[in-house]
Length: 124
Image 1: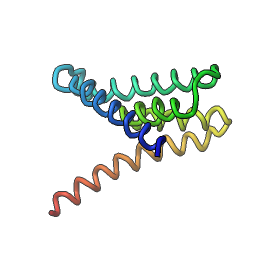
Image 2: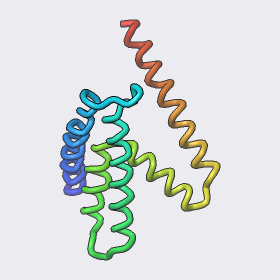
Image 3: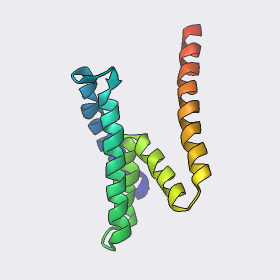
């Protein structure tokens, strides 16, 4: 139960941070790219890499803190950070083809899923 609360509270913080940063979409444009979302995705990836680096290089941090920071805050901030971390882990393990298939499949099927959901919503 404690671990669920840590992830949930971290997710709460991450989601609020995502909302605030993604507000950049309303004020900052560059060739129609959604800069707020791009910023969230890149910042989330930097944060998850930073936290994971600290956990690998330090014995001071425990599993509960890792759950709170990585799964909770970073996961709530952007699932893109989790996606990039998983690809990084595959690359570190030498699974280059698996990483490529996962990355391209996620992008392709993710966009197709959004389109499918959009089509379904128009049927209602």
